[in-house]
Length: 388
Image 1 (cartoon, rainbow, N blue to C red):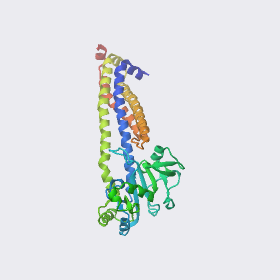
Image 2 (spheres, one colour):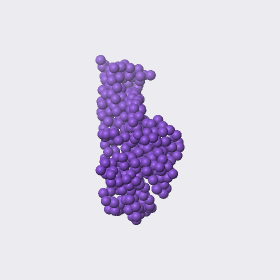
Image 3 (cartoon, rainbow, N blue to C red):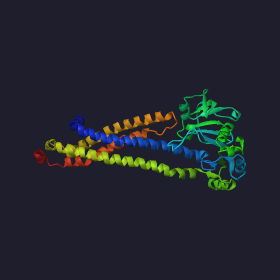
């Protein structure tokens, strides 16, 4: 109670100090949640690429020109290849433009069972079933978790994919990465979407059944993955073979940018909040010099004075941290709710991130209050009593 009473002596000054910390922690929480979402996407991608090679003309299914499905036979004939899965990956919304901070929603099609049981990336179902070879020729779909929320659909419902009606036969559990924004359809249906995206002059020279966006290649056990990727690029003209190491190298720079942003926001909150607390505690010590002198004269030890003032500073940090966390969590929740309609979820507020933000604010407050507290403890009792 004494701590709260001391803080309430100068309500405006204390309030402004708390507000400064609140803003800093709010920014830290928001940017940390954005970085956590990015890290989640990245770690999911790393797990996906870890045991396979993805072959396209541009590094990702959605990034390059279509390939001929016959290239799959060329790849399968190479030493060290256990299975080759042709796949199609096209944007769900062809009107999407500009740069997206999240993963765009896509229509994905692969030959069911072509991986020969070698796929290890875990994708569990919340309801329904997965696609099978028997689904070829029918318009059925398995929705990722985010897309299911976007369409407000569950197993048994129908959804519109680029103007075509598909029946939902399954909904996936959240994975935190790309499958959450995918609509998985039979391979032939996906080929039709890819064919419809071709310019007329190209479409007149091929059929939908000739086309794939790329291939997922599963190496045999013990195969040198990098050497196999090089062999694939030599065997298939104008191809790009991405391994797990390539994926990690490609995204390292972008992840580093987000981590730098988080560190920068933390430093800003450290400087602004720390200086505010130093000022507040220095003024508080000056105003309470006589009080501190009296306490020292009647036997209060220096370490007790230091402890109480540091605790007071830590309490300021705690209040600002909790308010900043609450404001940040509100912003994150509202932003994710607004983006869910379009399948764009940019933030992931974790328990560790929330706890870290509050602990950071408390530690910041205690560190900033240490110097004024130490100065107060060193006051000579006689001189302090004479202070006006």
